[in-house]
Image (cartoon, rainbow, N blue to C red; front, side, top):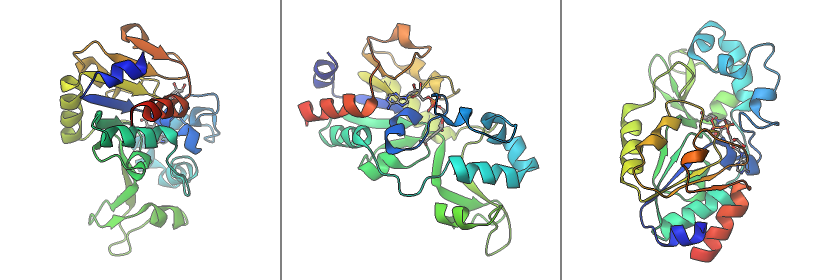
Length: 239
Ligand code: NAD
């Protein structure tokens, strides 16, 4: 049914979350092995990853961020690669992702809307000088700008911060215009990103996720299997 639906669609949006990257070895937030289960020295991860915490305890923020949010030597998995192949085949029009790991782009997807930013991009909060992920990872504690000594922060959206207006606009536009939306590997509980699904006006909503989501009852099809396995089968059949 999934393959037939994709086959008869031409304007598909993939809406992805941390679950598409677990098969690359990056933990998600809410699975049993997810980041929410890990030791944050007494603070819940959503508190540590908030703007208030970043401002008040930058050392603790970066200790957690470097340990759990930025990964060296990870590679796109079968789900990322399948989505890139389906884009190339003219099926997928855009990937709207909550992920910050850059793996969709590394897999070859061209039209990626990164709602929550990208951990490979960092900037000085004082002079705006740009830095890669290695600079942050190699800094002993809080990364400082080598030009002005300002704090270098990741270009990712922290809890309490607003999403980029232009990205939100593009994501809404793609989803509203789509003839099919495939949600993959997201609990759909992080707002406002999850709310974007409500802009879909069609009836072909598919959710590929290992656990329940609040949008399951509105989906044409729910698939409780690993994203890499499912999407690889689709790409094999259609590309
Ligand atoms: P989440 O942890 O809330 O949900 C992930 C979902 O994926 C879970 O429901 C889980 O059951 C499912 N899942 C895990 N592995 C799967 C697999 N192999 N196949 C299918 N489903 C699988 O994550 P979320 O909904 O993306 O939202 C939380 C936030 O997590 C986002 O803001 C995102 O920025 C951040 N985050 C990103 C990364 C990353 O960039 N890789 C990693 C962790 C967290």
